[in-house]
Image (cartoon, rainbow, N blue to C red; front, side):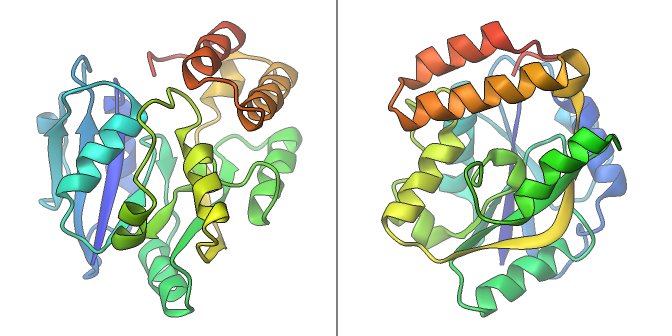
Length: 234
């Protein structure tokens, strides 16, 4: 059975959009959706019009890694799926996960495309369909067996930014078998709407390089906030 975990901080509009178009809510293998809400979030989850499978977890601390770990600790499913609030899964989402596990993989990610159709965004999204330098980002929606997640030590809560890449590096080090499902998630292009395409890509490249060189997570987050303007307090 599957538990979907969605970390949230001021994401009410995106959550509302997600549940309006979600095609997986009634799937018999989906046990629950846990929205892990930060302590100072303005989200009023109780007013969402959504499935009875959706529950809210008011987290003790703010931070994507902390919130996802808190939710994972109480999740009842034996498969954990970490989904960003501004990412919409495709049709066949749950079946894709189930099939990947049947094929012998312990974890996986999805390819994605953006919700704005520009050639340069299509070029970016094309790289998510295969394993490469940027594989493992949170927008690719990690799914993983819960016992494997625990064996890896969950997300590093000291990693203020790029906790997803840090976790993926642990997966590779311990040779966890994973796959990339080529069935596109729909990812918000909001970051590109607030910044130029060149600025976002150069910033992402720099941050990944610094992360791989061991730059501290808090300093990465400070640098990210200086380089990239965002429409939310994430």
